[in-house]
Image (cartoon, rainbow over all chains, first blue to last red):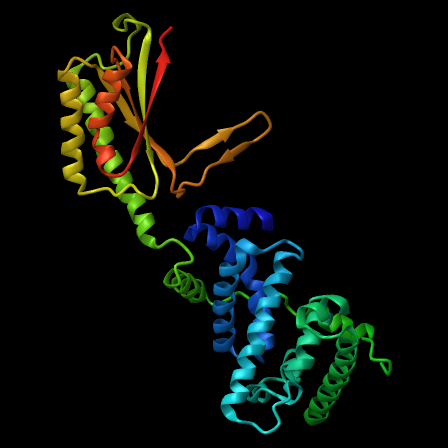
Amino acid sequence: MLSDQKLVSDFLRSRSEKAFQELYRDKTPHLYQMALRLTARDENLAQELIQTMWITAIRKLEGFQWKSTLKTWLIGILINLNREEIYKEQKKKEVEDISENILISKSSVAHGFDLESALSQLPIGYRRVIILHDIEGYQHKEIAALLGIEEGTSKSQLFQARKSMRNRLSENKNREQ
Amino acid sequence: MENGGLTPEEREAFDRLSSHKTPPVELEAKVISALKEEGLIKTKTVVMNTNLKWAISIAASVLIFFAGSYWGKQSLSTSAINPTLGYMLILHEDENFQPGDPMAMFEEYSTWMQNTDESGITISGQELSPEAVLVKSNNSISLDEEASERITGYFILEAKTKEEALKVARLNPHIKYGGTIEVKPFMVR
């Protein structure tokens, strides 16, 4: 398997479709799974998110300083684009309470009551933190940097996210019985 | 659980979550298409040009082969060289190289070779494949076949002087199509 540095330098040197494919195929499966979680498993939104993420990333790739891993950098772009999209949607719908933390995907109720669907029912702010911490394995310090929030906020959001998810799993279990 | 930490069962459940999901096949094409529209990756025409150039290359190679058979004794022989220098024309191409109609190019290269031969300068040569490997003492590196700057062919001239070799090089159609020719003297030993 080629290293990230090699994938990036090969692409920047040639700007060829072939070199991009190598980069894309190495990184996209993981990022696509994340995009699905961020969009409450909406495949169309996840695909749009991935497409926009690659356009943004390729524009900025030459200036990437390798202060983080390539994967973390791409995840950062993905999250920021997702936030911008949600913000635009909120503005468009003119919802009175536009706090991110109460936004729940409409599509989430359509899924089965497993961990993935419980995750997709979480408010997006909680969802991001729990994805980054409990699934991706990032530390609060890294999450704070990625999301542009305080480390303490990341910790409290994770606490609330887990609590909220347990409640949902419990509710779902009771409904099944 | 009260302190908010994950229980071992919950940790296990999270670990079981798939971290990879195969993206739809069509997504790759969509992303590439969007990048091309934005001008962020080279368009397919570059690849097509490469293929076209390669098709021309094959034609040129065939031409060279037949030219060699027809004109005979095209290979460089030490006895034919006096003084002991030969000249290699190395054909370089980059993004400025714009090939024309393959048949027209074939005719032009053919005429150029024939004119060179008739002027008393024996000529041979070959087109080079896009693939290349740099062999070093501790490793080997394959060069990018789609790189915009490449060496795509060579000719060997039995010219008597550098000026004569330069004159032949300047008349090569490669120049007209935006290519560059490196004229390199070599020793015949």
